[in-house]
Amino acid sequence: MPHSQQTDIVPITMPDPSQAPDHGTVPLASPAAAALHSPLEVAIIVPTLNEAANVEHLVDRLNHVLHGRAWELIFVDDNSPDGTSDIVRRLGTQQRHIRVIQRVGRRGLSSAVIEGVLASAAPIIAVMDGDMQHSEDALPQLIDAVASGQGDIAIGTRYIDGGGTGDWDEKRVWMSKLATRAGQVALGTNVSDPMSGFFALRRDAFERALPRLSAIGYKILIDILASSPTPLRVAEIPYVFRSREAGESKIGARVIAEYAELIADKTVGRYIPIRLLKFLMVGGLGVIVHLAILRSLLGFGLEFMGAQTGAVLTAIAFNFFLNNSFTYADRKLRGAALLGGLISFYAISSIGAVANIGIGTWVAGQQNVWWVAGIAGVLVGAIWNFAMSAAITWRK
Ligand SMILES: Nc1nc2c(ncn2[C@@H]2O[C@H](COP(=O)(O)OP(=O)(O)O)[C@@H](O)[C@H]2O)c(=O)[nH]1
Ligand SMILES: [Mg+2]
Image 1 (cartoon, rainbow, N blue to C red):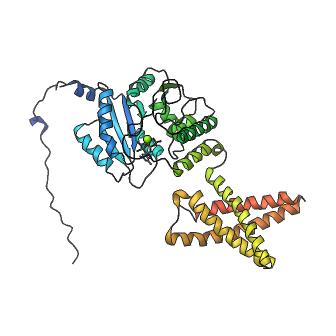
Image 2: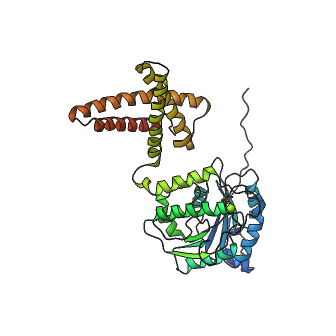
Image 3: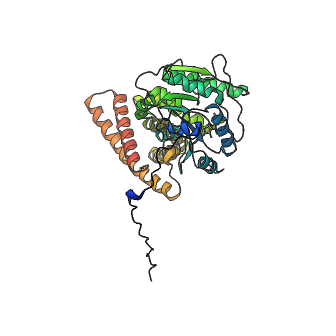
């Protein structure tokens, strides 16, 4: 017998409006309530990943430095296993200016910040870390610099007088300097700390940059500065980066790789999609693998056709696995899908090879520079492989 879906339905009748009691005008009880009823001035967006041990202290400090303002605090938490979201929700029941956007199955500081901004109606947005490393004492200055029109954006800066990187070791200072320089060159900017995660900006400045944001990785400020259709007026406010209060930094190889990708996207990415660029790089390595295998198989005494076949088959597999973990790291195939992907990639690449030879031969017939014909064939084959594998092997 199928399970009964019957539920008890309770009819609710509409109250008669003429019977409603008259409350009159309710006076605003306290300054806190007044702030709640005056127009929203600023939203503080805090991306978090395992910051359970820091959240409460941060809220205390912000309540202190922003006292008297009409503000809200939005945490954007990537489903931290340490329960960061639960803590924020608990605080939010008592303090209605606090809430959390809990993202499930998502990752990334930049995209978290973007979603936080979009969830707020505030005309000014401030962004800061959730680990107490950004000195909240500088926050009112950042907000006021934007509110007073000193800049479209105000950036908390470690690299001007009065700022500093606290107790960083030499290696971290050096890494940061290198990355900062790369960011400045890519942006063509003299902003002294484009890597900063501590800044405030006007909402309309953010909205103009929004359609062009890359949203890759960790460095949302660089993304905003580079995506803005007209250069933003920048105010810089020094602060000293503190040591982390609790928990761990998420900086690692992946963060560095994503930074390189963001910089690439903001520079060459204007002319050629980064994914195609990565695909072509992998293809270039594939050629080297091909030649190495060919050389060794010939060395083992195989005749050319057999050695060439072995080299082609190995190079295609090499390209497949490298594309899977590098070019398509965000859609990486695993398990059974990995095998299916490999088979489809072999099929696509075989047709690509036929197209390569066909086009190359045709171009060679039109003119007699051999390498032009060779490159033409390779390019057509590569574009075919890229387009088809994007549509089939690594389809969304
Ligand atoms: N939502 C979200 N927050 C992140 C992510 N990675 C880091 N964060 C938060 O971003 C802030 C800065 O990260 P942190 O690891 O301290 O970077 P560091 O200060 O450069 O070492 C902290 O509040 C982190 O909890 C992420 O993938 N998603
Ligand atoms: Mg930190």
